[in-house]
Length: 339
Image (cartoon, rainbow, N blue to C red):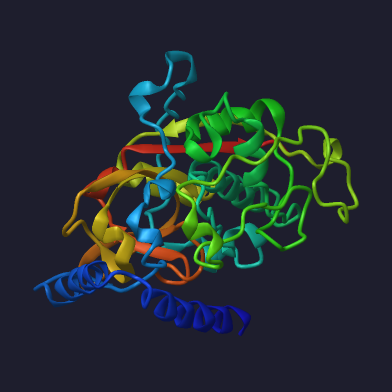
């Protein structure tokens, strides 16, 4: 009920805010949405997800740095191929299989900070920790901690980073708990206000990377010390870019992090099975891949984005599966929790 009320407030604010847009830019957005929704045989629907002024510079949403810039020692080894003992189901959804896991059902909001690489990794690791412990360890883990304290080692914080290095950071340094902005949940909650949630975020090209607190919780109400609140991985790896292998990895160990190419039309995604239709390349982006299915003969992946619950299908989206749509099957990473 709260989410629905929040969505109504945001939609009203989007409409009001759009009045201040230049007529040409407003017409351009409406033209894009109309063309997408009237295009023959398109598998998805488009709509307005962000403040129009925010869409003038979306580089802040693309936070994955190129794989070819990663040093050899930081490239994750590909996990050995594991064969499923039983046939893989036609559909699978981690949110339905493990709905009690807080991390599984939560949607992150990176705001105007290129922290998708950190948030998606923290989210996937939180899912895997809950699943591996059979819900005994049921926490939302802190993307803030990775983004701020691995800044310089994993990349450049709000200016982008590497999911591969984020997994290695967790393996070496551990990861503390931390919920969304204003949640007062965990040791280090996210400190940047959501977009679209305030006018403030649309006025800055990119938020500064928050200060690192390596030895203390930023939530004064949290009962544990940071050192006693850390969770680790025992193994980190990349997953072979093959559909059945990725599916088997998800069903066996939980969601994975995927890096994908983002084109202009994806910013307007509202529902359905996304496939690239129109627009220029905007950059690379990290998302969480958590299931799959089939609609009218079209195979899809089910994913969680880090652009808040007002984007897409309450923060989730579907994308074509098995054809490496937007490179989503090329750069898959994961890690095994230490229990």
